[in-house]
Length: 395
Image (cartoon, rainbow, N blue to C red; front, side, top):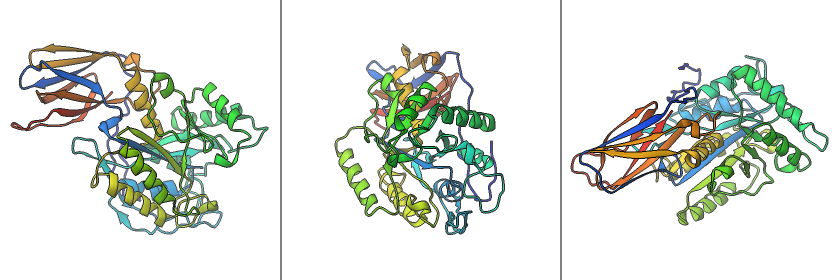
């Protein structure tokens, strides 16, 4: 669906396909038969070196007014005073957006996620609202952002009814938006240890695939197997303007991590991104710009282009798929058929996609997918000597 917004965004295509139970066949054409080859799923989508997942907690309106247009390209909101007296707007300027590529030369915009409380959503079109409305959350969803469960009323403490908070929030989001959330963010963050375990137990019992909490250790490695991919306690890096030199510490840690040559997955969050540091737990717009401009310059389209900027849900879906996808390869002349049954992948995932890596002295000249869609692949011109190509597909 395409919608023209007041913030002037340019919508990136996204496949919102229904569950496919029919066999899928990926067909590769080579100029000559390939006798020595391999076709394997990349550890990360687009065969990137690391994934960066960013979430905005509490469903605050600056996610739509500031973060979305800055990431996707558009006009950031001018200063906007919310119901609490905070400025959740930006500078009112137009920005070109921040991008990485799909490994095949096509740009993709930065995207994030929001964690919301269904009991705190604002009425549509209410002036000076501090929280997003359901209509605004739906707009973020249309632009490829994922929606996380943050409890119905953001309740914390030893006596909280965690199961009810999760059930009520899940029901509200499903009724309003028609989606089932797979991510739970513990309310209270790092400062509330009293309810974190009851929330975690209730969230996993309700079918959530990941529980996010500042108390959990930050493990930047990828899940080793399907079981680990489907049950994650996710530590989080907290970004706040109140903290000194937080961005320098982050970049230093990331640079050290990338030197190990291991694939990595970073999970970070804040609350608001407007001109004020909302409740002293947010990232002011100038700091937000500085950090993400630096991230894009170092690791985005115009830098090393080795980062996949996607929500935690999208990265987790990919990890589950790469560990559960079963496929068979068959060669006939100069064609290779990769056939798999999507029913081997757990149902209920939103982001059904896989990036394959082709390694052979014979380059792939054309790609077709039956029962799925080829998003892109590394194209090779006659005379090019390419030992590795990336093929991105989804269903």
